[in-house]
Image (tube, rainbow, N blue to C red; front, top):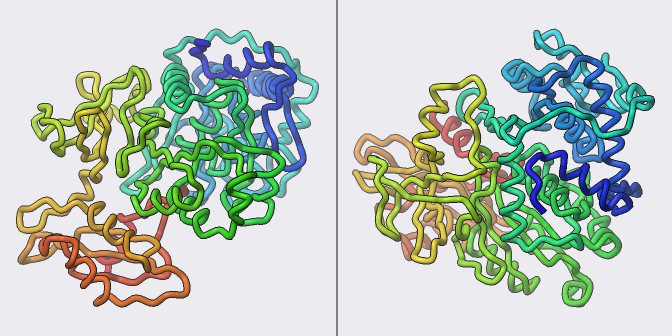
Length: 511
């Protein structure tokens, strides 16, 4: 199958597999045909309200069937989806809505603290819409779309038309919107499908936030492309409830996209051995969004007798660049590049470095974004000669397997010597008492910079700074040793389990 327009995936499947179960949510089930018709009605309503090709629509919704209805409805109208991080406050959301020039804002009562009065802060926003009655001023999108036609719209859309703006988390300055085309997304779905060997029999478990580029590709676009089914959980918190075991037993998911923190929780879970051996249905565990410590890989394999497939990507690449294969997973590697995606490791002069040497990873392929919305200078700096400069330090082995060493901006230079925080973090993760660790660089008069570690200790155990320093001294050169190790009850994280090092550094620098 070769589809190049995102919503055509849904339309094609609805025609060929009308009664195939597409979405499972709580006790509700929706077929491909039902989701397509619902999206068509909503698309007709938006067009009637004045939505035109190329316009933007912001979506701030929890994981739900309504997210799918809205996502595909916007694309069917020829417009661009702007998914909003559900953890943001009104001021942050208003920035994204204003920057993107969104015409409509689709949300729910859950986000009344954002939606109430947001039109006052957003000059181009014409209406706030929701699927139920709300305490804030909004139009009931479900009721309003009921009498609209449920046939596929006839908007003419090309593969180069924009489909999605993915905004960065904005840990440094204002968020920037990566502009992704229909072909960016469908080509990435094709590459993922080939690497993961996805079939119509697969059932995807969506519990990471659908607004995030990883979850959106692997648990929204990819399964729709392949005509698989999707089991929607409201949030990652549902994994902690007894309902998770019921979902495993009765809904039988086969594809599980997680982040390191989720896999740590699964390792800790009290799941009986007989259940894991005879009843556990998941065939494919994928980890993305943050580096996966080797210790977690080993512990997970020991408990579940299955590997975790680590992948790498970034929003600017739709987002998946590489993934380990099902047959071969190399610890600490994020696998070879997907089909049709090229990678190169270069030095500061943009010259390729020898195999196995560290440099900046650059990417070329059909998945690479058009650029950043309204940021021509940053686009020019990031996209050069057809290559996407990722800002990640990496090395590639003889077989093409990529190893992400660190972010360029996280590199610590101690007395002129490069120190990679991830190397120190990997050693800390191997300590039996450590649950999570982050290493940052701080200014120092005599050394230029020094490494400083922040560590979260596992529940019900105690550890001292002296104990961890002694342990690190056995495994690392002296110049790599953290000057200080801070014991924390919690570490600030993004929605995908990335530790916010910028927040840690700001805390220290601001006293």
